Length: 200
Ligand SMILES: CC(C)(COP(=O)(O)OP(=O)(O)OC[C@H]1O[C@@H](n2cnc3c(N)ncnc32)[C@H](O)[C@@H]1OP(=O)(O)O)[C@@H](O)C(=O)NCCC(=O)NCCS
Image 1 (cartoon, rainbow, N blue to C red):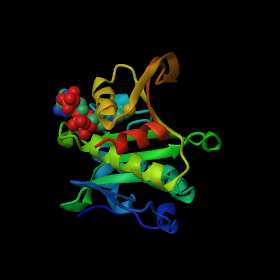
Image 2: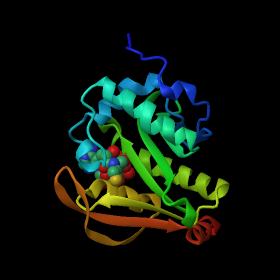
Image 3: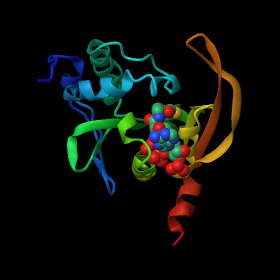
Image 4: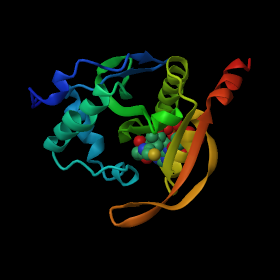
């Protein structure tokens, strides 16, 4: 029986990102019931070294994330999604989102993560492609970019499969867990996306 915290800030926020379906996947809003599934990847030492957030040590950390970051994102109506298989919509297997960064320049940052037992099946490229199409269709965004720790070859390959273009490496761009890190930048522009969707 899943331990479920009730009364957190997330349940008071009514807005959720509109669901998006792709061939195999459902992108939907995150809910308190997702906490254990989030904990599975957010505490996995094969996943967290590549993420710009601290690993979860307990379910309490995940509740803080849901009531903090997620609730805030939904208050701001950010396209911040849980990822599930269409065949099991209630089981969260990862996350994907595009976040205004900064909105004033019509730029969004793309982020994604998948639990390890679902790697290697092209799920993140499929989900991110669907989300990028949705974002270009429903918002005025001009540029969507992904900053990726340069040594994260799986994510860099996923970015290529999504259809993002490699723009270069920002050397020593961020400091995280006491270490300077290089960031590889991948991006797609609105007109590139339009040209690629026009191709037969
Ligand atoms: C990066 C990540 C999101 C890719 O998602 P995915 O749905 O597995 O993507 P794909 O199935 O298209 O795989 C992309 C590449 O990862 C590599 N890869 C996938 N599964 C792998 C596995 N089990 N072992 C080793 N490499 C693997 C392959 O190079 C693959 O490219 P290919 O399809 O040309 O062989 C996923 O590996 C992940 O969540 N990693 C940890 C968190 C992370 O790095 N997030 C991104 C932060 S910027």
